[in-house]
Length: 630
Image 1 (cartoon, rainbow, N blue to C red):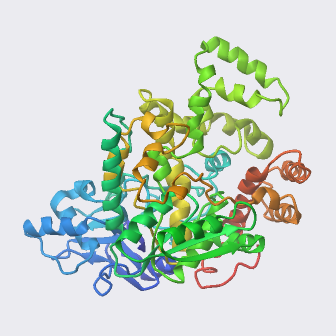
Image 2: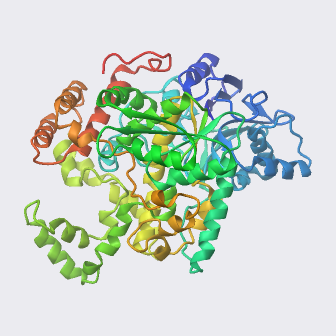
């Protein structure tokens, strides 16, 4: 696992070597073991390395035999040994045993179609000296990040935004549309970021930049579901076989490895498969109270026979980590569980360099409780559209808290309007109250419904549950789940691997009928059946907790006052109506409403604004310092 960065100058100047070093010094946490640089007229490539495979020979940037193709690569290719054998049979000669060099020769053999052969997680850039062309690609699911900035003079890329900000001639500014969408999603949907002019290369995309600056962007794969009716047990066997193979491939490394372990079956399934191969270490964190995950994880670890480590996070420890987590995230991601992930990654790094985790299982197999909503709303789904609209208007006039009001409102709202993914924090009406933005922008920006519409249009032929999964695959998974997974683990120089997000396993999952995914009142039904005999029975049917952060209770006490003070001190009054925030804090503390998630979204934005728009402390955390003004 590594960090990459670089600059392509369209004016054909050799990039400043001191700038390339700045760009990689700031992401030393992604690769503390090694650094490397290569440049010539018009291009500069830079690299930080966390040594995992072929520790002695894995230096980058790396080239082919005649130095006509150069690469910087972040990620892991799990089928690289098979690919290497194929390439050697075609006459390619290798000088290392790395997966990085396999990509170089794949590019020589297949050009841009090299990505079709890769099984793994990746963000890489190839410089083709003959064509004078830059080729960049990101993995199928968006496990690894890839950011870029382009102007008439240059194309700048990196694994993290802070690297781009360290380049020459990069100005900082907030993208207003991104702020509006952040308030709904709790993250900025791709390809935008919170920074003006800086974008994400979307998952399953590659781009090419020519020497004159012309750019082409191409989507090479689509995580589309296509349910096929086949015997239930056929799918059960396929899930077992493919997951077993994926876990085995994801365990390949030359350093110690372990597994995150929570209360749910996803991480338990990964840990159980790993334990069948070798003795392993597992790691969990929790919070004091009834929903402390460490208690359950400890029981699970004992049942599996792992060497287990755990930590209970106090309120002070949680909040003290927030500024550091926000610095590492680059842009605001207001998922409270990210802070728990920061702590469990810190714990794991004391013992291992690689961890496997259960991200992606819910999106593949239908694991979120919200996926049961179409079934619960079925009594209203048969009503004629005019009647639905009438009932909706009548229900909206009822006071908040009236029993059945929310059910009727959701049941008479089209799926395309009510489901935007696993988070929907602020409605459009609320944004006009909480934000100080131009009214015309509120009317004309590409809003969350319009963003989701692209994916709904592609799935008009599918059932509601499958359409919801596709929305989450394209919005929630890369925008929230994988973003925090990469940034919070890399903050501690820990490589995270996600065996569920394997393209071969998805090829199985995408064909599973909805009636197999959700059945007998439970989510991930077929996956649970597939794990029988692998996961101990008491654990198999345990409900998912998912890092239950006691944020609501914390903000009712003195922490709520402190949160408000920090928001007020963040100088975001040009964007946020502070009076409206004060009202929300008061209502929350008085028990009139639960505004915890809304307040957290605003709090994270406030601290991000201080970090990246006011102080601009590029080297604060990179050099091990503490952020003194938050």
